[in-house]
Length: 151
Image (cartoon, rainbow, N blue to C red; front, top):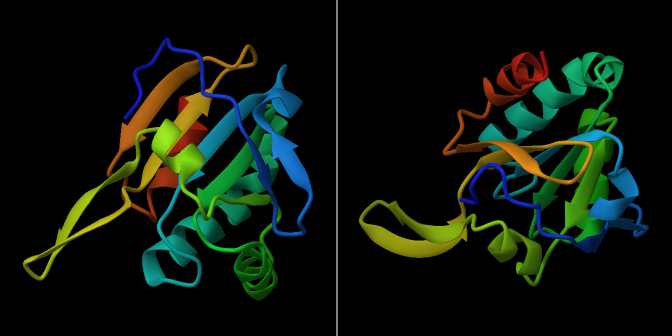
């Protein structure tokens, strides 16, 4: 996980519609950048839906939400449509941004070790600096936690 006080690594990734988004597009706004493992899975769906429900309050506080996983643009589009998600989902199939934000880690499940995304959320300020970082977040609780962090 990256340290607070450091500049957020820049990136450009396609969204669920295939349109490119760069972190620099959001300078002047707070960004909640969250990394999750897979579209349509239980925990990731709970987290995305909770962010969706709270989205108007995030916007009132001047923040945007960007979700990142290694799923494809097409998978993100299905995920967005199934749950009516009002925010941007970014596709990182090569895990370049996932690795840049240090969330690609060894995970153990049923005694088996694999590499995967550790559920992590960053709060990036208007100048592009990481001001909060939360690793191994609880999917259902993380959106409300991030809303509180915005004050």
